[in-house]
Image (cartoon, rainbow, N blue to C red; front, side):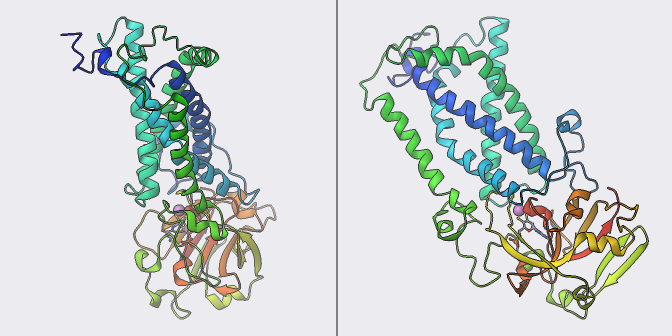
Length: 416
Ligand SMILES: Nc1nc2c(c(=O)[nH]1)N[C@H]1C(S)=C(S)[C@@H](COP(=O)(O)O)O[C@H]1N2
Ligand SMILES: [Mo]
């Protein structure tokens, strides 16, 4: 029974002559580098959300020690989040063929019998379960988030965050155990010495492609995904090549407001009646009380310009746009945070929107203090369009798009 080649638990069931330590090792080393970069850019992306600022940004209040590295996300250089997230999403998508090929190359071992030869072997197999499960989970939730427009709004963050720690812990253990074997396999480039890897089939079928050919095939798949994704983080005509990117590609229209829109005013339930000059007031609260400002009041304050991108967690971003509006720190000064022994504090931003995960956001003091952080009224010389947040939106250098709240109604300054 144990030798029946019709059963996947029998080594002879797996017949591809491609499988072997060399093939697995090449793919494994690519993933070692790639997944490490994914982990680092992922943690940085998480830090960029100000996840420790209550009451709204903190979607993972139980992170405990896992938030050890959180720091005040900087505002320089202004394209920092655009680069970080472009690398995270583009690289993640590009690595999918490599991940699948790697799993394919080791699949016979999934069926090895007996399931555990010893305690150490059992521990190793459990760690592999976390590795494969965690990997599929992280790539899966990432792709779903990018493609399906937040199928799990809000809960994506804790899922992808805690999943990343589980996955990466198993990944580090696996890399530690396997790196010597992988390097050895690469050094013996030609001779396929199986050792006890259990990867080489005892019953090879006739080859239809060489190992190198198979690697080119995987690499070609990665290249294709890269070429149809990367356009969403690049500006100009290349954006049209982002065939796989749901928001980043396509045609956002032309003119000053002609750049990507995440949620439209209609989607967010913003009624033109509440954004008109008659109805709309900005309510600003701080140390010395509350002031209510009409759009005309805002226009009498000093206006400043800044060239800044919108960079979404989904990986798409815009080139720099010219925003014009009132500095956040000037608004803070109106309510008693004037720098005169009263340092600029954090701010809690609320929009007119009544439902949705991104209707509110918290910004940190260093973001409020930056002279390029604006409550923008204009973009590229024109009033903001309804979809880009008319009558006023937040724009902060180097911050994730989700912190750039549109249709702002209320700013509350104070330490959060
Ligand atoms: N009120 C409100 N502001 C919001 C959002 C939202 O859904 N509601 N989406 C945010 C996200 S996730 C991004 S990426 C940017 C996109 O800005 P844009 O649509 O002007 O490109 O707006 C941010 N501001
Ligand atoms: Mo976003």
